[in-house]
Length: 191
Ligand SMILES: Nc1ncnc2c1ncn2[C@@H]1O[C@H](COP(=O)(O)OP(=O)(O)O)[C@@H](O)[C@H]1O
Ligand SMILES: Nc1ccn([C@H]2C[C@H](O)[C@@H](COP(=O)(O)OP(=O)(O)O)O2)c(=O)n1
Ligand SMILES: [Mg+2]
Image (cartoon, rainbow, N blue to C red; front, side, top):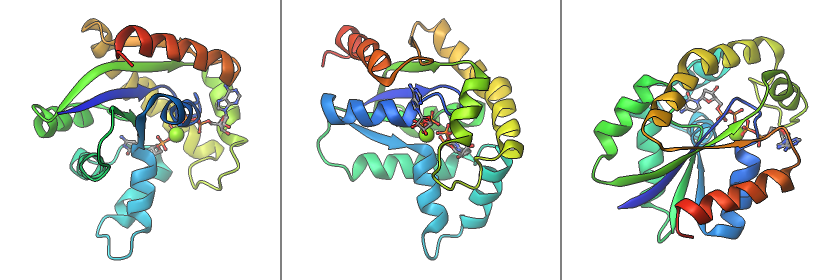
């Protein structure tokens, strides 16, 4: 059984940055759904490359069959880990249902780390990210924020009703955020 912490928040809220620090210090393995999709998009012979690029540019969500298979493969191939930080997933109802169908009995969701941050700050961070991403432009970001507000936030609310959400405000320095994140892990994941 894989231990899993879902990490959610608007684009640019700092999910990847904080996950890297958790992985470095707390023994969880970081799996970014977006990174896995970008790698699959680049993989020679992938039948999904064009579809993935279309969704990424458009700020819409790739069908769960593709994303969940990438996540499950990565978990199975990463050897012994205390748990996995599943970053940027589940992002909509399709993601959530597909995960439940595919992973029930194989993964235990310990909690959901929710990095909350005002959207204008998140947008500015993405525009300054400097990773050459095809979706860090004003037009794609507008759509990504819309997708977050209409599709992802309701998923966070769903987990909130189940008592699984641990919110950490991320309009602060990485050090301040990370200190609160460690508290959350100490309280809930028995690090
Ligand atoms: N607490 C923070 N304060 C200022 N900038 C940040 C902070 N956390 C991350 N960043 C920067 O903001 C951008 C987006 O961060 P990232 O971790 O990629 O977010 P996400 O994965 O949620 O999109 C990156 O350029 C990153 O260096
Ligand atoms: N579960 C997911 C995660 C990401 N994607 C696609 C659509 C998203 O806009 C892009 C980028 O996701 P990513 O998590 O890397 O983006 P942010 O880190 O939030 O800025 O990938 C997806 O279709 N399904
Ligand atoms: Mg990210």
